Length: 276
Ligand SMILES: [Zn+2]
Image (cartoon, rainbow, N blue to C red):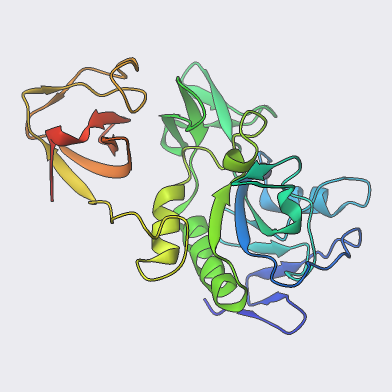
């Protein structure tokens, strides 16, 4: 996949469609954008979400919508402010539209279980393999979330690398982090912490860069290890304890706990995991 950003701040490449929204025309002030905000569309398809966000009567937009097959719709040139963040604040700044590029990923968001299927807010059904049960970083109880596709996450990485090279981007945030309580996107199905580490590496300025790198996997040490809904013993257990020798994938770390994945996902006290 070859993608470039041209002098008009438009992404160019085979899988890019331009649906420029005429409602957005205000350029960023100098030194901005410095932030990238990740969203999910909570929509039916990338194209339907892109066409919706392009509409002149809709008071929302984003720079890009990335589809589940890796297709990309650009709605706003990267030097122009889009309307994706809304009421938002983080680290002493508010109203993040003026600071940030917004990328929407086609994803149905939170799902409700209905028999053996899962249903989105707009009534579309999803099968088990498209869904994870996980606890959102702003919530306490697990819910069902539509998974992102590998291709989609890959394209998002390639696009983000390009944006980091071309613009002065020093942090990546989820909409759920700048509008907590109001927004839950991109949600726990999106590997936000891993994505930040991947994009900023160890040598780049970035919010996550100062943290030591997280081990990728490990093995349960004690005979029974409680796996919980959050990083602490006050959180309820999500399943039976994990047995000694159980291999786990480590997703993130918080306050001495790892969020790990086996067939299920949850938090375990990190001292009980022998890391690889
Ligand atoms: Zn959002």
